[in-house]
Amino acid sequence: MIGLSDYAPIVGPEVIGQLQRLAEALSHRRFVHINSTRTGGGVAEILNRAVPLLNQLGLETHWEVIEGDSFFFEITKAMHNALQGYKIPFTQAMFDHYREVNLENARRAAWEADYVLLHDPQPAYMITALRPRAKNWVWRCHIDVSRPNFQVWRFLREVVSRYDASVFSMSQFAQNLPHPQYIFRPSIDPLSEKNRELTP
Image (cartoon, rainbow, N blue to C red):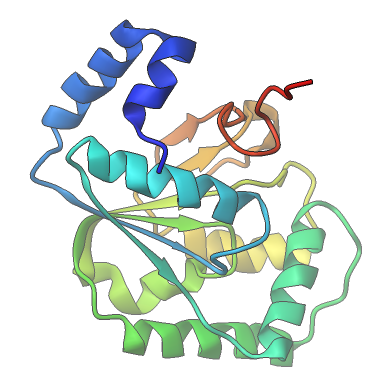
């Protein structure tokens, strides 16, 4: 299993030490990440590596994955594309089913946390049922929503406006929201299989 020390030759021991000092200030907090899959896609790749590393830093970090039927994932795929500007018509039945699946996942949720980080639109609606479960809710948007399909963004904006903060990959990808917004720039994991140096 890859650990923090494996990154020291790449980033330097000073960076590892800085991470450890920053983590000390949050050592008594519990974090929960929520997304829509454990395998496949960039978010799952990030969390598969980040969650163990955060726990190594002494931050109690858990990863929850929502469940849904095929129609739900068809809806969220369409939503994903619409938020990036594609002209995809949404019916009321699609919005209703999206809500229903999120609320069903909320009913099954057994966690409590200080910080909850929900990734992309798939689980975003859970906040409407679970707001008291955590003190701080963060919406992490991994896609470009600068020129969204207005119908879909109007629906989602009402939801994500309930969060305490949002995180985007670039300022150019963001939308104005009524809470603090942060930029977490794209990066790669130099120790993942696809990014490691090849030997002859």
